Length: 249
Image (cartoon, rainbow, N blue to C red; front, side, top):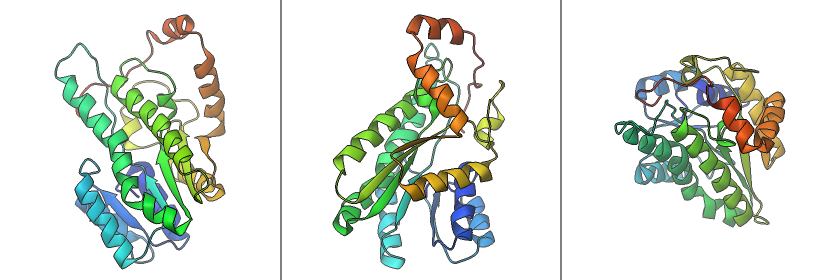
């Protein structure tokens, strides 16, 4: 599981550890990772790795497989977010970081496991996307683009693995109480505590659903957003609240 040191990743780790799973925890920050692993029941593997480094992710995957075995579930959860505006040249670096982490990091997370799971004829590859990927939100061009990319990528991967026994599960959460959303200066409807979001997502994973929006109320919001005519969407969202610009969280 990537992005395990805080927020939704930490909540998912706690949920699965409590259920008796042996975890491979991946994140950039060592101290929170060690603290998390020490607080969980069971023995778990900790990998201080940035998902933007595919070679190191592959090494972590190989170590986990050699030490614990081929996992039943791989969750690509790592993500960063920050407000971005195209007119600011300095935001190009933020665009690059967000896309490299949220989209390419997901590819790099799954890559070491795909052929192994296909060979076994079983497994679940779980990608944490976002409702923000359904339409391009103002001030969030990098984040919306990255999550739109994950939605398309996960669909491609699901079709590629059709009939192999390997399930690709796309989860598109709405708002969750995490450090990432704590800086949002606007209302966040249907926001969930991280532990509750983790419980619902785990249920989706267990069922092997192809695609799910969590919570269900946001599924209706997503459907409405998806069918809004462009002229109406532009008018409604032109002055919507925006995440502050700065370093990606």
